[in-house]
Image 1 (tube, one colour):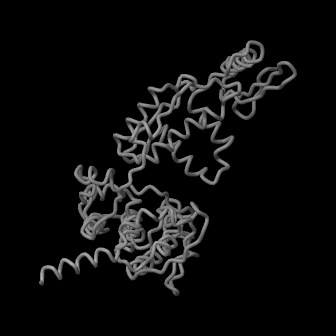
Image 2 (cartoon, one colour):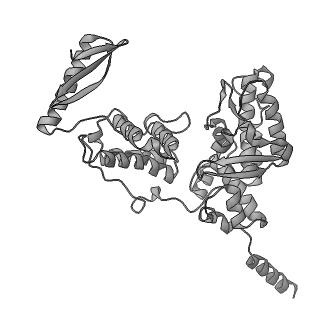
Image 3 (cartoon, one colour):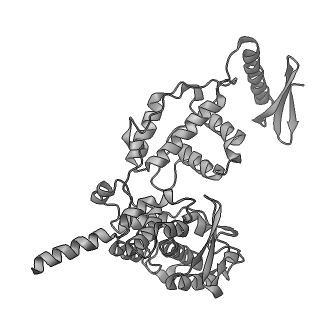
Length: 382
């Protein structure tokens, strides 16, 4: 029999030129399953006897590339997130970039250009746009010289499209901007759904505190958001005033000393997590056995309300303020203090080399500025 049942689903199975082909039809109706089996048999026959390439959707092609290659890489989980945004968008400001149902072989230069135009208009960073383009180009490379039909696409480069070139400027917040942001995030603020904070149940109240607490911890540790969101309670040493941060991006550890306000926040969070059985400092309050996700739309919206992303500032800095801006703010404050070296700053940020830290070097005060001021003062006095 060419189809057989496993549970409620019909599967197909047939042989052609000594090779067995088997798979799910994803059908519960036998008649529909036979139609799927017939199409599969025809497709295999076309490829075997007539050299016809398999015609699959873009979504299926990217999925096969990810499962067959990219998932096993250290960056697999990050890549999976990029794929989700590429085909589904996000609940923030990102819309779906491409339709996963289009034929893979039909992907065109115009589709790629449209993707870049859309992402640039959304304010997506050049590096993130390149990540989406890399997913497409690597999927095409993965299927070259196989039985799958591949598109002929020419991808834009940063040399020809300046929107794909990382900007030399970076964004950090002034003290006034930090205070405005924290004001917009204060847990006792009134919000649309409720007329007063007292009307919140404990879960809603904790979710509001999550955003405020996360912002302060990122400002005072310089950590990446995933390093705090994934922080287990075992790595919080309150008695020693230390936080042990694992840096999955570079696979190293950093011991961070708590600032006074981070210590107060951790003490408050330890009281909060006692309400649920969880091993995480920032749990998913609906599923306390898991840490919360890395999407803090509340922080991004607060940045907009605080005026951090008005058109003048976006033009000045070449992009919007993001959650990563909090990390840049931490590093910039230390660099401007003149009390840490570039090497020390690199260690605090968990960078694998000082090359990654060099963008902050311009903020470290030099002796030249002091000398210039002294000379001008002397000229004024004479």
